[in-house]
Amino acid sequence: MEKREIGAKTFLYPMPTTLVGANVGGKPNFLTIAYCGIVNHNPPAISIALSKRHYTNPGIRENKTFSVNIPSVEMVKITDYCGLVSGKNVDKSQLFDVFTVNLKLLP
Ligand SMILES: Cc1cc2nc3c(=O)[nH]c(=O)nc-3n(C[C@H](O)[C@H](O)[C@H](O)COP(=O)(O)O)c2cc1C
Image (cartoon, rainbow, N blue to C red; front, top):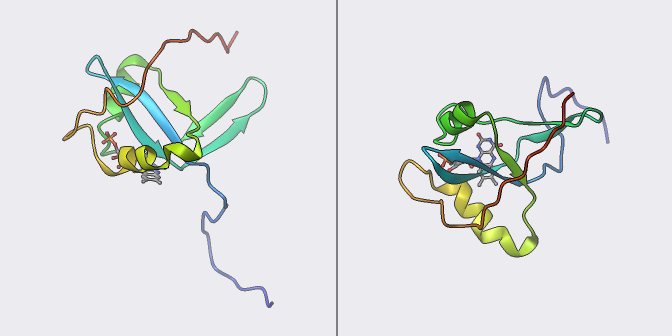
């Protein structure tokens, strides 16, 4: 097949589908994020890109913490759900059991 010029695009597939969790207003909230990537090996760093309008964003800013979770195939429906409804309108705080980990990654 002939090579075609398509301009500057972000076509790097497959994209991982992750569930990002954060406390918002003291309650857990979850959203689906496919814009997730590796930034650095050591120290470990990954990136997520969130649209400005999401309910989760102020919670991440407030607590400076969030989780990135890899859902199993069995979790496809709930993963889709978290990406279709907003914490602005629906309480997603009870969807998953949450726990806290203290990670010391940076010196
Ligand atoms: C498969 C899938 C992937 C998504 N990936 C992203 C993404 O990478 N970045 C983003 O800002 N929103 C993404 N979304 C949209 C958010 O998950 C969605 O708007 C969510 O309802 C926002 O939740 P919140 O308002 O409770 O924070 C994705 C949705 C789906 C279904």
